[in-house]
Every structure is written in C-alpha cells, then in structure tokens.
Length: 408
Image (cartoon, rainbow, N blue to C red; front, side):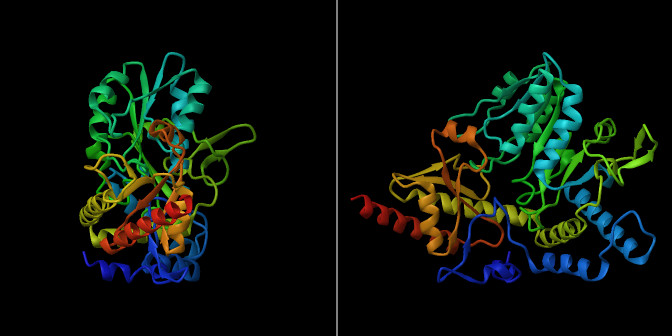
C-alpha cells in the first residue's frame, strides 16, 4: 500500500486543527471520504437526480440503474448469493432493528432464548431487550474472558435448544477483539437458532464472506467504510427474508393496495418503503470500488500492523491502561490514563490536532464490566500511519505531564 498516495485522495486530511496538522484517529465512529466517493455523490445530484423504480424517463432510469448497481456491488462485496438478499437501510442500527422487529418478534415466545454478549454496541443490545420484553423470551449473555475475548466452551454452554436467536458483533468497537463468528454460527445452527452479526466494525477492515461465515443476517454501515452517512445494508438468507413482515409501510413496498387489505412486493423492495437514500447508495457503491481497488487483505494487514505498533508504543506510557487483547485485534486501541478523565484526554489531544473518541462508546454494559465509566479510543484506518501514532503517543505523554503538574 502506498499510504501517501491513499492520503492524497482524502481532502479532509489536509488541514490544520488548532494550528497543528490533523491526525484523525476516530474512524471507528465514522471514516473519512475519498474524492471518488464525494465526486460520485456530486455527479448523481448534478446529472442523474430522480426517484427510482417509478418514472420511465431517462433520469429515472439512470437513477434506478445506479441504485440497483450499488446493490449488486454490496452483494458481491459480501459474497451474497444474489443482490435481492441486500436490503438498503439507514445503517447498522436500522438493519438490526429490522431483524429484531421483523423476524424475532414473530418467532420468539415464552421459554425461548436470545443470546448476545456484554460487549455489544447498544444497537445490538437494546433491540433484543425489547424483543424479550415483548415476547417473554429470555435474554442471555455469553460471558467474557478476563481479556475480553469469547471462549467457544462458554458459547456451547450458553446456547441451548431453546435458543432462537444469537446476535454477536464481529468486532468490538471498544476492545478491538475479532470474534469467532463462523464457529459461533455453527453452534447456533446445531441448536436450531439463527445467527445475526453486527458487522459495523468488521466490514470496513477485513474481507467478509457471508456464505463462508454461515450467518443468517449481517448488518453494516456505509459511513464507517469511506461511504456517506445515512446508508447501510442488511444481508439475509432468502427463506428468512421471504418469511418476514415489513416494519415500515407506504409507497413502493407494496404490490396491490385495496381499501382494507394490501400485499407486499418481493424482497428486497418490501423492506424499502418510501424514497430511499439514493445518493447514499451511489456513494456506498463508489466506496466499495475504492476499497476494492486497494484490496481488503491489504487494508487488513496495514491496520493490524498499526494496531500492534500502537499497542506497543502506548504500553510504554506510565500509568496507562489498555483494554482488550494484544493479539487478534483490529486497528483500534482503547485506553485510560491514571487520574485523567477520558474527556480531558480527548480535549488536550484535540488542542494538538489529534482527534480521538472519549465516552462509553455506546457500550455501557461493557464499561461496567471493565469497571470504568468511560474510556478514550484511538481508531485507525487505511489512511493512518505510524507517524500518526507517534503524534498520539507524544500527545498522551504531554497530557499526563500537564495534569500531573495541575494535580501536583
């Protein structure tokens, strides 16, 4: 990978923040966008802007081709069997809620179980809480090992023949751990359950093959993988999607409407009521083109090198605690400095042009498991360098010195 050439394609990176060159280390929250994605969205609005699946005029046809072309790109990117298994959503949160409300509420009842983990983002935890409350099903958690990883022995113990749904994040947005999704899916299926995956933190960073993983549903967001905000997708197995009821009703998702009854279109359109985020889909397709031009394996390799480098560099700072395993992690490091609140850490770093995230990262149960109220997080992507991590390390040392003098 030619990192300098890649960085040149991201206009936002070439600016100063508070008098310092920007070091953007918050890609786990939202990645930056390359010029090709920005241009694709701009070109759609300038040349092709029209609604899809409706008009027969030229602009409508071009918009529809671009929208459905993006669906085909997503299907190929995930190695889905067919494009109609891809439902465009606002993002991972909407996709997971669609599974919870459109599938799980119909199949779960008293005595059934839903299995998740304590490391889940709120978007893969709260929907299952609500399903359990609405149906009488029991919500169960696979316990975590001391380093935040999952033991397959614990998975075997937690999933039972009463389990209907297992929903696990592929990659933790706090711990950086990569979960054994293929193995968990096999255990779920042996017990008659379906496997749902939160792919928000995995899809941008590694090659994903939903068929090889054996998952039933897979959700992700475009804005974390160089695409626009407000667009994402849900992959689902055909038989499950065909058996689901839509959870939003209105235009374009219908087949026939009578005064007192209506019928739905085939998948995926029954789940895409109303005017979709067409420009977002176009931008997502352009983001996939961009990522594939570099190669997901190359991106994965680069980020793992950065993660190892960051773990080693930050470990040299006295009084720092790094959360999650040293090995088998993606490109993020979550940490705390002794006696310094994470928000103060982030504020001082921002004064030096370094953008990191501070807070509970939408993982409050995991924060309680870690016995902290919040953490700071530096997350890396294909445009980051070892020099960025050196800047972060120096900034943390200066932050520690600053607050040490202030407290002293």
